Image 1 (cartoon, rainbow, N blue to C red):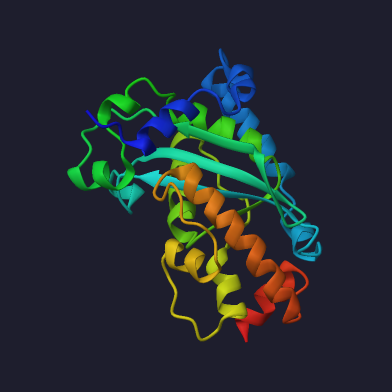
Image 2 (cartoon, rainbow, N blue to C red):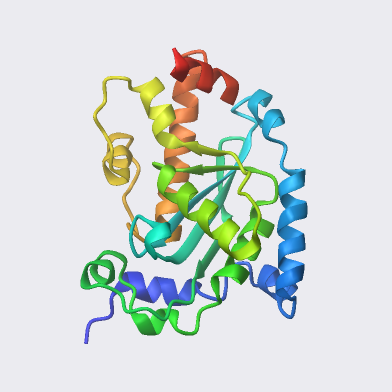
Length: 242
């Protein structure tokens, strides 16, 4: 029987990325998780990130694989992948990946899209522990995602549901940079944007694979928008508001 290479990669990554972070939260109670999240949210400095030069800004580029688009209608997070970008350089060695426990039956469409099966998720960590580990990895850095409204809606929903705390991290959408760098472009899908920029499309619809491609896209477009006069995130938001 032929083994799906995406699933094989996923299984190799599970439990190996950021194991030290998971070890640090083992045995902690839900109350400790909530206290940690609330303290972290207080330390997020949203305004400061607006003034840092883009070529010096440290970000965490991330992606979620989910069962659908609407967390308030019962859709769940299946996996989280992230990679750090420092000063425009993608740090492939500084990455985060975890499956998320899910006991619901996956649709054939989700199985085909992600390569995931129910048995892959049964023994995975529960979402509260994965989110705590993810936020420990992120700290106070700016988050970046491709068409970020999807990721933002899930994090907002589950932050409140699990921890009764609001999601306060800044998320920058790579499509914002695309609008400035290539205002006449009709590119939408991640793979189309990557191909347009000469970025290899690899491990599509795997959370870590998509995060790494988005990180490469971020690096390319940060260079392009700086050439158009956008030196900080504040410049980006001001440019988009005109």
